Image (tube, rainbow, N blue to C red):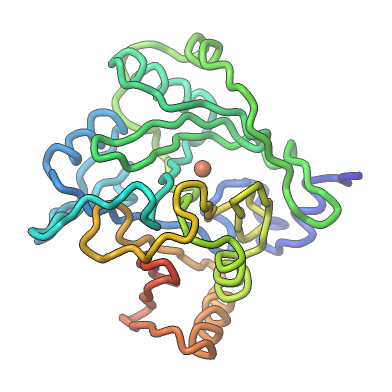
Length: 302
Ligand SMILES: [Fe+2]
């Protein structure tokens, strides 16, 4: 029994009664931004511009900020003592860029296919259609579109049904208009980040019990967390990183990411739980920064 997915999602999420759009960033909390430490800043930045269609928004002392249609999504920085993270280090599994619709996904697929960018995979996850690639320094990337939320199926326990099925890339490619690609579609956001952590029960305790996200799905060695009954804003797996030592600040890869709270009460509750657990945080205006249990930086903003 699954009930009516749309009704169930709406009943549990006040925002959804006003907003029928399932877009990830309209949820009570969502991933706003990711920050990667890289070795070759200019090369990696050029790659994100040409392959991912991001545009430079701001230069900083140690790097630059890239985004879509003026919306900052990705900060790249480098530093003198940067070391390549071992494959099993906690950090990034992938940053997932959510495009507005299937046509936008097809347009990007045609762009990378026509430029011979190798794909790492492609899947139909029932809730979404996703294509995977890697950046030149090995940071994982997903580009995906969501199916309409009314088509998502929720179990009686509130979890969302996802799977990993074959995605028909040829059909997606054939549907897309060819040529004239001029960057990632307006409205593209970071739909989720997928992390490598060292322990799943520890991830459940942190993302569900401390940050206050809902556990939306589990998979062998992975948990998926979200607000607003989105399929996931954050995923964590141990597929490469079971029992690994903490990430070090000078390692390449995901230095930090930002979770933005549209629902400020949820943010205050999360901060209160961090304080109660004596997890050190740094306050800077509306933003609270911390290092998670695996050494990954996390900013919580309102
Ligand atoms: Fe993902």
